[in-house]
Image (cartoon, rainbow, N blue to C red; front, top):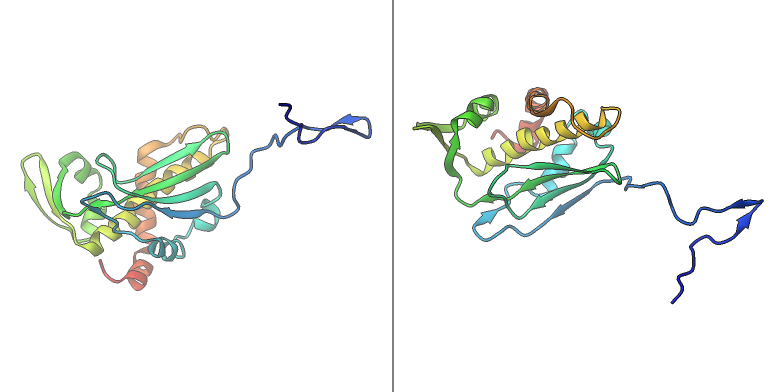
Length: 198
């Protein structure tokens, strides 16, 4: 079987391109959601993400290249992640569902590194050997996911998009954490007005 070329012929003495050679991406981003895994639940809804984006100060500038914000079914390893697609120069931010049990241990290194957000949320916790036993509520879990995890992953996206080659986020985890903490401080009052005190 012969497949016909999409743009055959010569026009004005020039051979026409046969296919689209420039990558395109959606003008608007999509918020998608998978069903939570068994034993997990979403602490953030699609409506929460829409409402939160209205108060993020850099969103109009920073969302360029974010193709999707995905609420995944869960994760046993990470709070959230950012994936970049080199061919289309777009990225997605992934926010996984949480385990249904909101009281759990967080290792001391992670807790100390992100102490700012835990103190800001007034999270109840106890030292448990090398870990901190943290007691989240539904509101505190939502605030943590939006004010820290989402902003952290957006920081990775902004870092990558502000480099010339857009291949690697040059400033890494430290920049993403600083971006999340500074933005959280800027929008804390607006967040509390919109979602209530966590």
